[in-house]
Length: 93
Image (cartoon, rainbow, N blue to C red):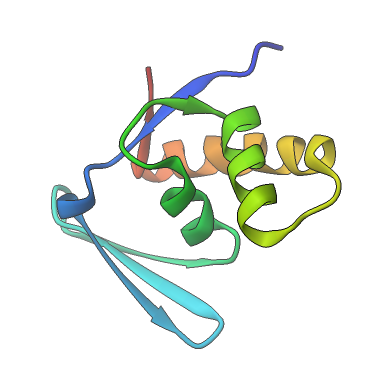
């Protein structure tokens, strides 16, 4: 399966509030609040404004958090990107 490219919601569309181990993400466009845990907020932050795929996000997270296994992280990130798309927080491009 190809590594699909996604684009994160514009930063001004989301209000991200950490709350202990949970993070609340209010989507101003849909007026829905999503309750997520790590690594969802970190993935959104690593995506930036450009469209990117799981490999790019995994590489950015690996650099930011000094992860050793980028290939294993890529599979996890790909799964989380699908979940973020289902929530409407990222869109496939």
